[in-house]
Length: 426
Ligand SMILES: [Zn+2]
Image (cartoon, rainbow, N blue to C red; front, side, top):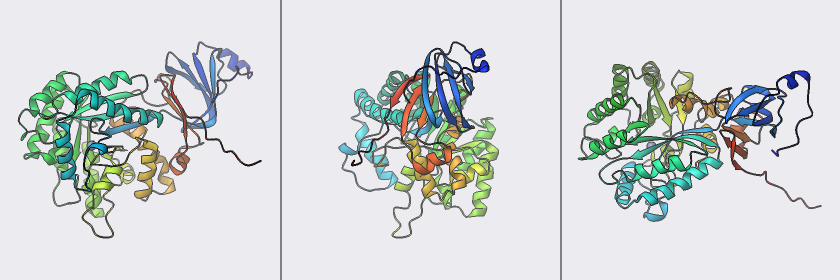
């Protein structure tokens, strides 16, 4: 990983390729080139990918290790992270978690949200995340304070991570006087995505309609919290699919949790999956929260309550696995590591070794597609967002949880983690 002396490999084709790279990453294995290649970077973007690139500038030897374009967290809540220290936390239900945060957020200040969010973002950066969509609660209790704090975080950490803000009403929209006006204000003030949470609204379908109206008005993608329980007798999924089709929003809508799908018998799951694929609605599975909050009332043989994203992917549904909550009443765990989350998901979802590549897709390429990121991936022209893992292939990244040795954002080093050193007795 050290910048080494310029390579002496100077075959004629390499000489002819001598161009004005700012730097070249040597001997990098990517998921699509199992034999090592060089990645030339110019102006923060990938300018060439080929063996033995010539370069007069900085060279960084990757040593045959796996390089990924960074992890993509398509669903996290920075504004309510790291709250465990300040609430008498009871192992409770989803409803109690919402109530606990609702009580605390009246006292949130911009500085407080910024500090807690920064703590999580920095953990995410050193775990290789380069793109992130954070949900931001907007309602009369918090006003626009969290929104202001997260907007500042977006600016302050742009050197390492692209942050996208999805504003949403956590505690209802049609039943929460003033929430709609605040949401509009946030949308006019630069929110990137609009979200919803119909299950906390007294009129869920009216909320879904209103969110789609606003999405169209501001030309934004939509990301709902949806179907977050294990009762398959009712669902808001069909209404979201219906509105998606009516608005020609195929490929612009995601639903988070969708744990009800895990409670469906195979024939009904096949139908629901086909419906999502047809409507172009994506699903984000949030293993830490889904496992923590689902099935709590079961005394034994508790259900996993986790929708099997890799199976849905096989059936043509765009899916991602993401972090959701970190160290709060919804999820009293979290290190913002998407590789760990993908490993956790693979373990709980009974993924086979042959599914491990898909499990890695669930925290890289697939959330990038879900977020409609046009410039993601190790390809010429894209930003040189590169993360180096101490392994040699994608499948092993899921299996081994290798250390992440370094990360680069637009070619600039964002973090470094020296390999552990063993001190064996002589
Ligand atoms: Zn969420």
